[in-house]
Image (cartoon, helix red, strand yellow):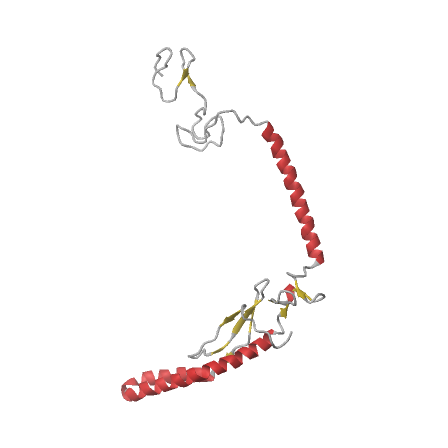
Length: 219
């Protein structure tokens, strides 16, 4: 890996410009597994001093008046002017440190951590997968594919015996319970998808009818 490393797509800026926590820190991530590494924190002294002085000026606002406000503004301007160059320098240092934790794939140009790197090939594991891992994965895929096909064939055998012409009701008309195609409602026991019969003449009685259409017997 050379010094040209940029990490333009896989780093996060954690820098703070002002306050007691002012400083530079960057979080770099592996392009393959997304695991992260943070650069050592580099304090930004000007930003810390500005934070302290701003608190002092604010506390003495009544005594300093406009002069205090102007001093605070001047301090902020100085910190802002120095921030850009200081941050660039800190970032270059962080990138240099990151080269010890990431490798650049010669094929896809991604930066990956040591766990995602194939040192024998000089490529990431996405471009040059581990052979033993690929064999194990292929064996598992083969096992799953064959087992799935056998299960499909078994389902086909049972499906051949399924009575697709039998009327079914998926919801019970009496209690609205889902029936899953059963002959009787699991909620109330109502006979499903079967025409009611007259108790007197055994003629089929339409659902909801109050009298038998053949003999007039009240249901």
